[in-house]
Amino acid sequence: MGEPGIFVSEMFISIQGESSFAGWPCVFIRTAGCNLKCTYCDTLYARNGGRKVTLRNCLRFVEDSGLKLVEITGGEPLLQEELPRLVKMLIDREYTVLIETNGSLDISPIPEKAIRIMDIKCPSSGMMHKNDYENLKRLHPADEVKFVIGNFEDYLFASQWARRVLEESPVRVIHFSPVFGLLEPSTLAEWILKDKIPVRLNLQLHKYIWSPDAKGV
Ligand SMILES: C[S@@+](CC[C@H](N)C(=O)[O-])C[C@H]1O[C@@H](n2cnc3c(N)ncnc32)[C@H](O)[C@@H]1O
Ligand SMILES: Nc1nc2[nH]cc(C(=O)O)c2c(=O)[nH]1
Ligand code: SF4
Ligand SMILES: [Mg+2]
Image 1 (cartoon, rainbow, N blue to C red):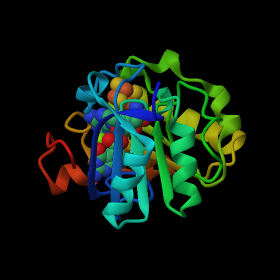
Image 2: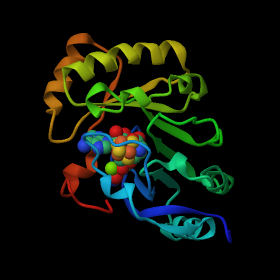
Image 3: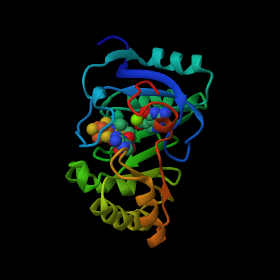
Image 4: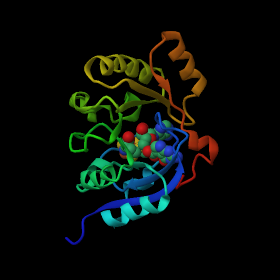
């Protein structure tokens, strides 16, 4: 028992590399543990290990950063029982809180004012069967949906689902992101432009600023 906490792989400050918030200085909390194993995952190290950090110490790290933008990612943040409590603590202190989640778990426990950045997993991830499409009804207008695309089959899947997201959820921002090092951004750009599909091409900015394998950025 003891003080409430979450399992953390790393905490760091960086330039936000993804989503509509790309480019902003951001403080990151990366939780440890994941219920999926995507073929392309660039953060497999966060699936194992981790240390328990009290909510109080998470908050202290965020406060000491001097930044107002916080991202909680993983691993899979929704596996942490105390996540909603941590998010509420941050929201109550007027932080902008982004939660990156894999789309396989019920997102409703996340406090309303947080911004969910939810993946819908495509075929080449090997994890498509884990998508919980009920989450489409649980999204809020400020949330964002992301498809990580490794090949043309993924693109066709993502473009069909992007239309359904726009029809069945209040979300208006949809990202298409190429699997880094596998699908050329220019190829994905061509497909998007040919179909004139209303999505944003999302490149992982931090992998262009620093080494693509660097941890803690
Ligand atoms: C590491 S995951 C952590 C959060 C959560 N588990 C999820 O999958 O959304 C953060 C984001 O990075 C994306 N990602 C992981 N590996 C990637 C890669 N090699 N290229 C592009 N995006 C990647 C994931 O799809 C997800 O959108
Ligand atoms: N700079 C930076 N931006 C990010 N945005 C989402 C990330 C993630 O791993 O979820 C990430 C990350 O790992 N680094
Ligand atoms: S769900 Fe996220 S953290 Fe887990 S394996 Fe997939 S990309 Fe990696
Ligand atoms: Mg990352």
